[in-house]
Length: 232
Image 1: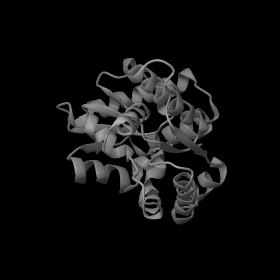
Image 2: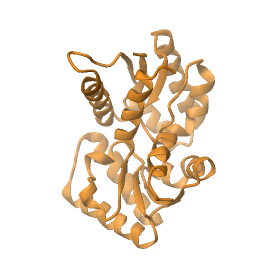
Image 3: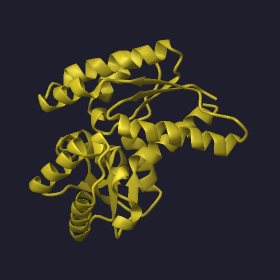
Image 4: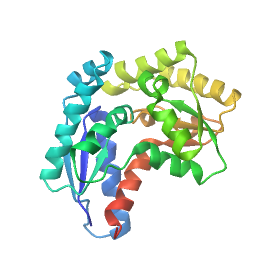
């Protein structure tokens, strides 16, 4: 089993499911008292969130690259960045280390490609929905087109993530807002919905959508186990 390096804390509310899902999958596959070989670097999210709001992505990338180097020195053989939005700075992380980063967009796209779906509704922070790093990778590398909510609904979705989910608050009115947004995306042609924020699985379940839901946290964690147990 290879050693995973997890960069977490963004927010820690969604890092906990990563740790849990990875270990549950290892136990299911190997049995007994097996658990994952991993090293976790949990960052302080407050300064990173401030970099994001200030559009200081180079500073955010430098902070996460530092975490990646620490994990590599601690024995990690591959990296998992436990967040969707901060994959915007994945190139900075990859440039800082010699070990591979398992990119969340590629993992999600692989799951979508196993279906007949080629147009998805993309939900997440406003950075993920509005900036090109996510949608362009989906389309350019994997041929998957993405739709996003209206500007007003992007702002609403973003507020719910940062002011509620990142603080562990799961509220029914917010779930209702997301169900409405999902319905509108489906009406616009979305054949599936990508939960492009690791906290969204706290709020949204498959029953909230008339089309398939792609939970990036679950998919990323499962792919991490696939990699850790592979011989490659």
